[in-house]
Image (tube, rainbow, N blue to C red; front, top):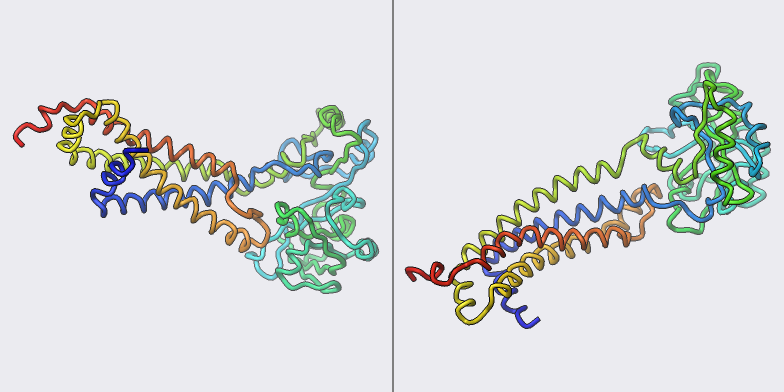
Length: 386
């Protein structure tokens, strides 16, 4: 662009003001890059490996349990290849800050997840041990657990029948996933539902949800309707959905990540609009005589308009790219520190595209009024008295 040197000089005419504004833009897009990456991580699509799995949970709430007696009816539903069940346990290990998902599972649960790589000998040892547990490799490394170690889980919801909150489990196996984007699933613990059902004080003969494997992915909608019809008009009506939809609903129990990110970034970008808008307005106001000279030299109104708009967009894009670049460096660090809860090697492409669109949009918005003023500027009025 032949006018780039002119735009660059105008942008840094007041270096202190421009640098301070630039830092504000960097901070805003650094925050956007980090938060939106987390949002995408929580709301990302499910894997192809789980396309043939459905989850049957209570229509009222995924915290509402379902009767175990539904299992034979679900298994008999046309289109169902296999069915099993699980129940959330919610125990803690030594300290509440050591949170990780832990739940009891029924027979055949691991068969539902062929992508979970585990030694068959370990699976047999686990199945033979009433109080045995299976954990992901990430979780085992986090706490330095070894096969045969006792994991002293403490109940927060379900005490044992003797009133004790102690649920000692024996580690019998660890599994891993080859897909780096799903490493967060290695941060979970599973033990036998039968042990949970026999030993807990309050809930017997009930499960948290059923897992259904389809004989054909194309039959998902029909099977879901048929399964839900089993409990229709009962006190335990069900809602059958894809595994991806269920996982997102489960995450939203703790917080609506999308809503939180949108609210925070809305406030940040609104403030950024005011700040950068004031900067551009002041910059153009100080350069009125210079703009008049440009018009005297033959620059058209349209050219002056474009020069100011490009200057505004350049300011936002420059700060935005620096901020997103810093976020790209920080995201893998945050991902590693999350112990697998967030699996993000870098900023997702979706976040980059949204970020670039925001940079261009904000740049055009904050530069619009100053650019219109510069375009309408009359040479005689601008140079009067000089």
